[in-house]
Length: 345
Image (cartoon, rainbow, N blue to C red):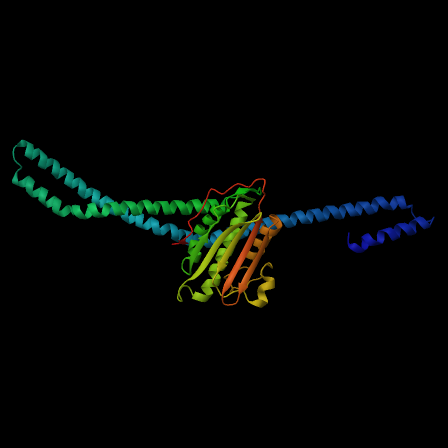
């Protein structure tokens, strides 16, 4: 029922009670209450539909982000996979030559035991050792093995980060190590920022666990990092003018867990600052942004977690987005994860 109908109800009841020819007031009350109840149910249904739509929008945005990151993640996996493949092929060829050396060595040993090695055995041994490039194999094989191990660890870390980033929370808040979650998100987004920016991380080692929807907070951090990379890209033109800097910092501030994402881009234009959290508003070129990222970030942080999101910006000097999540002191315990305080390679 709209506001006018509700406000007119008492007047109608008053008129009915003053006229004997009208229906008794008692007959009208159930009808009015029934209408109110019907409208209450409609409003509840509309609210439920809105929440459902919001959840689907968040999931669609997450899938869209993962889809956009897929090519970069494939590239990040392909690079170590390629040199693992090359090293394994080298080691395979080296193994074949070592097998030839083992065979000729056995013949040589057998000839020595028999009295003296024949000229034919000695000639084969010399030729095999010469062709085997044994010094080169002994020098390069340890390097190839170490590179392969490093490459496999890199692939494993990317897969683990992707799994951690995309793992659904099921709508249930749980204690989360934000330092670890942010590190996974940075790995997933590597291909978005590494060509235009150096990324620095400064994590508070005493940051407590925060009860939150981990996957949705991951999405917020991803949006902020990608936005920072795009802001810098617009200045450095894909790295043609050098690289900018993205700084990701966590702080424990008097009952709040604070996440700061700073960039050295051109800053947010003054005329756009009041609208940055509006749905579908974007200052990016067509095809570069949908205008949903910061609106979803606001919804996740403020509406779902009772937190705060704000920004500091200066024309020509970049922007810092600040996310604050409340820490439940009754569940507070120290984080077990502390990333190194150094720029990522």
